[in-house]
Length: 144
Image 1: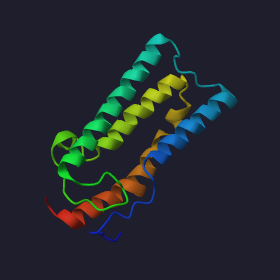
Image 2: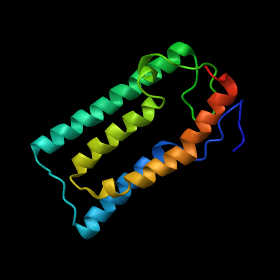
Image 3: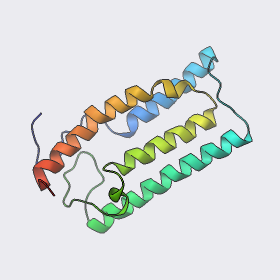
C-alpha cells in the first residue's frame, strides 16, 4: 500500500457498511423471522442507551476535531494529529461510537440478523477505511 501524506486513499464511506448491514438485517428479519432479539421495554431502553453512548462519543470526537481545526472527512487530509479527548482511549473513536449505535439500532429492531453482518462490517472498515487513514497519518505525522 502506498503511503499518502496529502490525504487518505479511503475506499468506503464509513457509515455505509453499517447502514447496509442494518437494512440487510431488517430485510432478513422480515423474510425469515428466525432470529428474534428481545423486543420488550428493557431491550428498547438498552438500545436507546447504547445509541446514546455512540452519539455522545461521536459528538465528543467532532468537538475534538473542531478544537484542533482538522477534518472529520475520511477523504481529506488531516491538518493536525489529535491525541486528546476520545483519542486518549481509541485511535478510532467515531468507529467505536458507530458500533454502539449499531448495537442500539439492532436492539430497536429486535432481531439478531444485523449481528451476522458484524464481521463483514469490521473487515470493510479495517481494510477499506482504517488502514488508509492510518497510512495517511503515518506518512504525514510519522512517529508522533
